[in-house]
Amino acid sequence: MKLAVIIPCYNHERYIAQGLESVLGQTRPPDRILVIDDGSKDNSVEIIRTFASRGVELITQENAGAHNTINRAVALAAEDCDVISILNSDDHYFPRRFEKCLAELEKHPDKSVVCSEICLVDDDDNPVDPQASRPKWFQAIWSIGDDPDVDFCEWMATANFPATTSNVIARREFLLAHPFRPYRFNHDYYFLANAVLKDQFLLVREPLVSYRIHASNTINTSPAPLIREMLRMHVDLYHDLARPLRNDPGLRSRFYRYTRAAWNNVSSFHAGLFQSLLAEAAARLSHEDIEALVAGVDGPLYPELDSYPNKALVNHHDGQRPLSVDSGLGEKFESQRADLTVLKERAKAEKELSKFRRDLLASKWLTLGRALGVCPAVSADCGKTPQEKLENLRAALGKSFWAKLGPDIR
Image 1 (cartoon, rainbow, N blue to C red):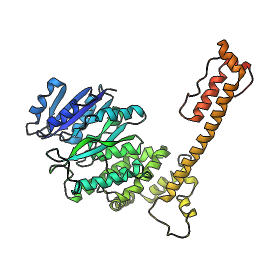
Image 2: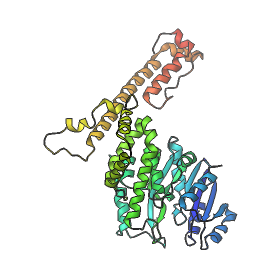
Image 3: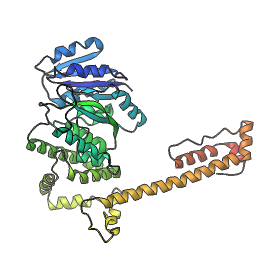
Image 4: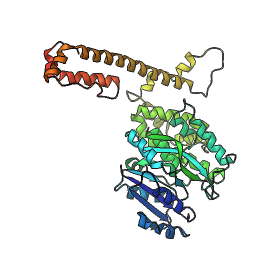
């Protein structure tokens, strides 16, 4: 995989050299380093130019904002690199960040985005006092991930725990398909919410990036602008996921968990106000439109219609404690029951596979064929699951003329 690092820079002459050194000092060096200066008024450009001999590319532009700058850098890096890492110009990496994060992407080719834990530092690169308000908030939200019953969707709905675009390493296809939005605060949150909802998210549970906390962080503001932007972000999220949700039961399941957990969000998302906005949007529909919309929830696309929602919560009430209206226990019970069914099917397949392997080893006919060189050895490990291995083993045996001549052991 070819790796590019993109750095949007704006008025960070104090920090940009440290950020670039952290990129150049990686145990797994990047293949390309691209900095776009977004109209800095300080000495940032001159500092960046001193790194040209070490392979750092620089583009300057009039101020266009963080999201436009990142999207432009992504498009340029995607021309020749498979994976793109984003670094804000006031943050810096730990030396083994690329080594460890790329290993996760290589191990999971079906995933597209990887993040890590973060280390909070101040203007002078010292660890931030753990008793200060921001570190205490981060400690609280990262503790959520220690609960084995909480998945990424529920965790992300509760808080933007990766915290920053500096914590994003992603495959170019996902970045190009999910450009950063024109938000002031939340372009990273929207991108990461899409990653977890579409089951494309990976996490390395150790700090691999230093996130700087200082007075000029954009997150330091009065509540109203941030709350409004969080509302806008979630309206956008609902809007953009509406069509995919119709055709993807897995996405719907993750979406349900996300929306339930969002009621307990601690990243300034006000779920009550959001419901009011949904009511405003519904008021713009006629009653006929609403009837047609609900009638469209039909057919094989919606297996949820085949059973009453949360019936397990009531059916398994012990008659002693009050029934909770906020626990999601019914959904969790159904999920665990589904997991148990999968485990039982896997155990059954493993038992059948083991017996079939013993039969193959005990077959004198197949042993003779292998000795004569007319019956090639058949791999017993072709496939991911025991069922796949069993089916592939039987299929391979069915192609052998020698096996067809002998006694049927399939």
